[in-house]
Image 1 (cartoon, rainbow, N blue to C red):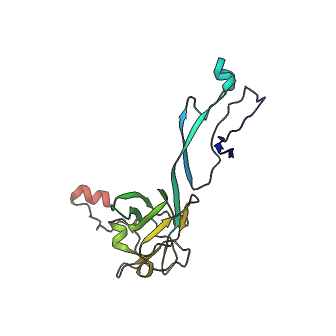
Image 2: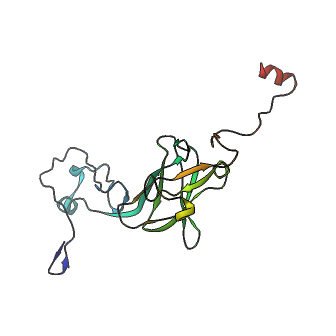
Length: 202
């Protein structure tokens, strides 16, 4: 808020609060914001007003919060079956220096994924390993469920405001990997040998 071109800091005052309960001070912010207290003299999860003394008692509790990250979340699916590609690890890259900004793993529950980021343009990739051996990235999903493919629109997306972004990535099985599960162990099982091994196997 501005008055005569001077910014008036936002503030809230509560009067006549009971002093016995334990209070918590937090920020009610958008779900896509990751906010933390940057400057606070007290444990903001366990505020006891009755323990404040002198000037602290009259001034009250003060805290400075900072917005650390914006959450980019999403729901990944396999192109043909629409099943969540659970266990696939995805990476978020900066477009300039190719540094990894954050990484995540797709979970089985609705194919959910989540990155910590900031406004800007990023690239989405499957992390090298079992996931990239089984799947290829078909679409970043920045334009919704039916987003254009990587071949059409590339693997970049842009976070343009403080509301965050929801992605709907599509992954496609690589040839010969249809139906494979990233979390399955593909190493051959070695049978125990010798007398002891024979007893264990039984």
